[in-house]
Length: 444
Image (cartoon, rainbow, N blue to C red; front, side, top):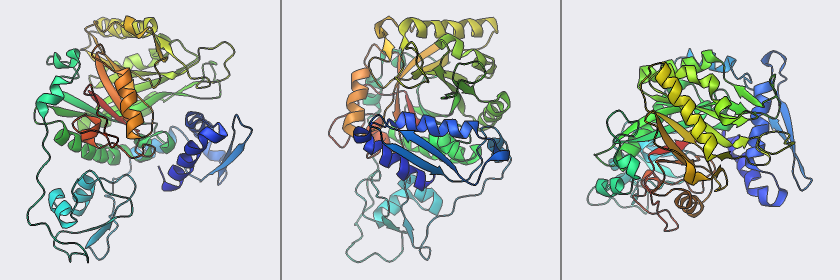
């Protein structure tokens, strides 16, 4: 997402408690504007007006860019990938940008990460600041810094502790299970709409390179006994304010676009999650269009209760926040299982269910995680401070959860948890630590 947009949305999110504007509603408005725009008729800029519950109206000007949900991604898939250039000062320094990690910077500069840490006296390789100037190994040491006498020791990962904190289902996962001895790492978003997440911020091959760099950091953090499964996490069915032709308020990606991402993922040995924001459908109805894509062995599904329209007279998804019942989730699992059996397709496949409030999965204790074709995975979403994120995750995930997922936001978490903190290897900055080891980490 361009830096300008990060600042706009972040500022509005912080104003929410005063102005009554929900970030979800803002993103839904922006995404709808993108989805409904016709590139042939698009003016140089667009404006979106959002009225808060306190009566304050915000008017945002959207910079000119390809606005079609389908057209931009076709061009991007056929565009050669050009390596990003670093911000260098006479090839001896790098200025840290938003979203940078020391691992990625070292790869960009072609130097060893530990050597880069030593050259800049970084006590923790996970902590760098935006605007910080990092000096190249071997360059002149800046005034006030002295070189350490020996390299920084590699981080110590207690793989046994990570495994011991997994749910029983995860500990007992056998070969063939999506979670057998692996941590999933997904990049979430909607093609052509950067505001919805990192997956939509660039072409698939560039995103793949970024995804692999982040996956490597998790591979270091989860220890030698666990691998990493990187995945594209497509918002396949996007909730919209406009009702659409069927009145269900869900805009599905065209099959051709989905297939292009699946093909790239197959070639790059990645998984794919097709995520549906339920809208006016029942949860089981909402995944029907996605079922044929399960013919590909790397495709899995997700549903998002936030956007389920469950209240009488509700005008659009997300207002109020929706929910699903355990019975509805069980029905979705049954539909998936029956399709896999009928088509003689290999399982199990992941079914991810999002939540950020304890009311979003009603009667959760009645969830059935016994279907052999489905790996039921409950995610904890929501942006915020380490304290807020960790305590919410610990409240919503316990030993009764089959498989667990945790969502992180590159642009909205303050500060972003490190890989070790997200896995519970280290406590968050507030001193609180993740309890149950997540099996799947989502980055938006």
